[in-house]
Length: 394
Ligand SMILES: [Mn+2]
Image 1 (tube, rainbow, N blue to C red):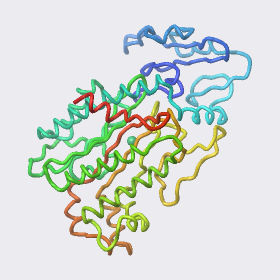
Image 2 (image 1 turned 30 degrees about the vertical axis):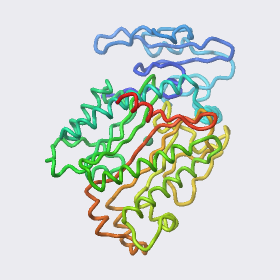
Image 3 (image 1 turned 90 degrees about the horizontal axis):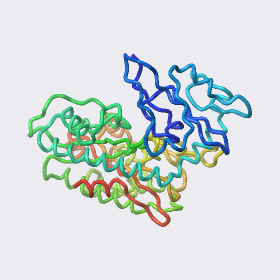
Image 4 (image 1 turned 180 degrees about the vertical axis):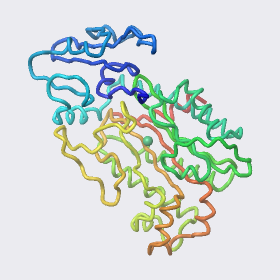
């Protein structure tokens, strides 16, 4: 069996054709771009529809019935570069690094069209999240919540930009938890729920995370404090801010909550960050570019030549080190988790003495908190696509 087909992001940057393999875009400067479009005669699978929609007039479209016929429409002279799979038939240089660097660098800035696609992907995602929260409150299993999400987001699993992360209790501490537990838990054993799920519009992703407590308890208060902190980070997004500084703001926020809810003793928030204790609880980056790929390209690029900007020392999982500029779109997703292996390391370290272990132990059953929004940088601030979508899908 072939894997589910995923269009190459360089292809879907040109055409919103997401489900049809063996297609090519040929671009020659000064000419209308050509689309080689695969439409076989096939009774095993349903062939792709004839191209239609707002974009078809922009292309010189050539239909092919067998993949091998693509070569008939390839350019034959001039300097040719080919971007695609290494085993694909192609003329010219295959995936030349100077070209890919140039394209990846520029993908950091989104057009109005791209931002509108992500705005809609956030609306669809928010609809799914609302349904998922209702399913959690109604006592559903992780699997049932997942199905309710798909139904509300009108998506199949393959159409999602990434596999839904739907975790209750300790599963919320597994950063990329993609199992969907079928068993229902009694209400007395349901403590928390973390959902990280997005949607896809014309090949552009949304990436959204929310966390809920099952009751009015201290964990619920932590989520509220964390939500305010996450929105403060979003509010600091504006042109010329260094993205790693937003990441450090995330660490200070996590440290404040650790202090405020008395998970630590004999140390203040600054000390928690300075001694890198916050990394035990917040072990990932505060976010990443988003667009044609959920983790979009170019996050470390210093220039279109492919030079990179180093990550800050001690923060190996940060995916974005560039300076914030208008029309960039990225996520803001701080987290605070009780992760068994990381807590075990902390317990063996000299920082163990600062930890209020009975309190930490009492919160392991909640797994953790992550709250994630997609944010567009504007001329003097930002637009939060996710908060606007939730407000509209109330
Ligand atoms: Mn994300």
